[in-house]
Image (spheres, rainbow, N blue to C red):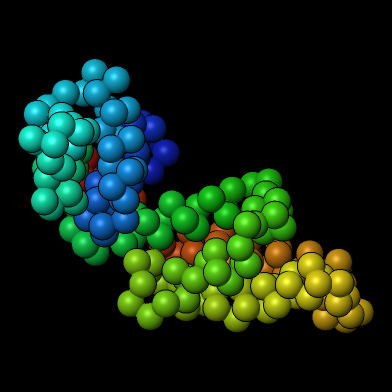
Length: 195
C-alpha cells in the first residue's frame, strides 16, 4: 500500500531532497562542507564526510566533490534517486513552498531579485523542474507589474494593487494545481524510495 507523502518523517523527506540536490549537482562546495559538518555534529559519521570537510593541504578536497558527497550520503542511508526522480522531488519542494495555505505574499513581494530571475528555473527548457509550462505567462506578467510598481510606474488596470493581488493569487493557484496534478507521481516516487 502506498503511503501519502505526509506519512513520511521530516528526516525521510530531507534525505530524499538532499539526495535529489546531489543527483542534480545543485550543492555548492560550501553547502556540501556545511552539510557534512551538520551531519557529523548530529552523529552521522563516515570517512567520506571527513574527507569533504578536511582542510589539511596534504589531504585536499576530493577531486569529484559531488561524487564523494553522494557516496557519503548513500553510505549513511540516504536513498539513491535517479535523475528523473530528483527532478520531480526538486519541483515538489520549489512549488510546495508556494502552495501552502495561507499563501505567503511576502515571498513574492520582498525578493532580492526580480520574480522572473527568482523563478527562472521554472522557465528554462530542460530545466530541473517538471511539468511547469503553465507558469511562464503568469510569472512574466507579475514580474513586469511588480517591477513597474518598484520604479513608481503604477497604472490603473494593469499593475495597481488589486490587479497585482489577483496575479499573485493566480500564481499560488497554479502551484496548488501543480500539486494536485502531480501528487500521485510524487507519492509514488517516495514510495519507491522508502517502501
